[in-house]
Amino acid sequence: MNANAISLVPNHSCGWRMGLGNMLAKELSSWWRTRRWWVQCLLWLFFMNGSMAANLANGQASEDAILNFLWVAGAVLPIGVIILGQDSILGERHCGTAAWVFSKPLRRLAFILAKLIAYGLGFLAVAVVLPGLLGYFQITVIGRLEVPVAGFAGAMGLVFLNLLFYLTLTLMLATLFHGRGPVLGITLFLVWFWMLPDPSVWLADFMPWRLLIALGHTGAVPSLASYVVQGLPLPTTAPIIATVLGCVVFVAVAVWRTAREEF
Image (cartoon, rainbow, N blue to C red; front, side, top):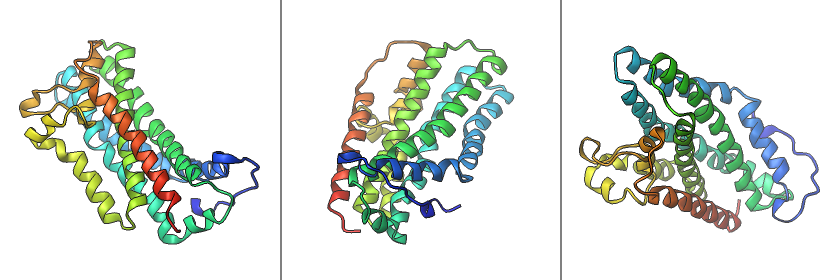
């Protein structure tokens, strides 16, 4: 089923919400009325929970299995977010759907918010909540490690925040560029830039890498998630604040650019 072919129905909302209900319904349908949701479920269960199962089966310590689980969420999950996120806008621009919906009573703000909400909720369900529930079962029942529920839930909250950073960044870049090359190139470069030891440590307080990934040589700078899982106080909240501010800025720029774009 082609989500772009879904008919829009009359809606009498006004102001910045004009057209938001219809657009959001369309975007949610692209997740839950197509095979996307179960394909994404299988994909992230395989990568995240499959890696944890393999590590536990090979005798890896449960503490290290959790860190590997969070590493996959920080280094691999953003790639899926980027690929689907960029196509949500560029796909519509290239096929002419964006020009069509903007000929209707639809605010540019509503256009961006609908995509952000739908994709954010979609990934929250299939890549955060479901793998997180299964991961907690794996580590506590199979790994026989006592992990505070609040601590594990907090770590999964950091997974979602990291996801939102790359989703909003991708949406912003998709409004600034017409081709997929620059969008994918810039975002994927930022996802993996932490692998350069010196720059990653210097930028640790301004990027989301440290939320889930230990930086520096041999993990000299532990991830914030490793503290949260154990219920320990955070050494710094700067990466969290910077990531939240980044999300806000990316959304604001995307809305600004969309308002000035001729589709």
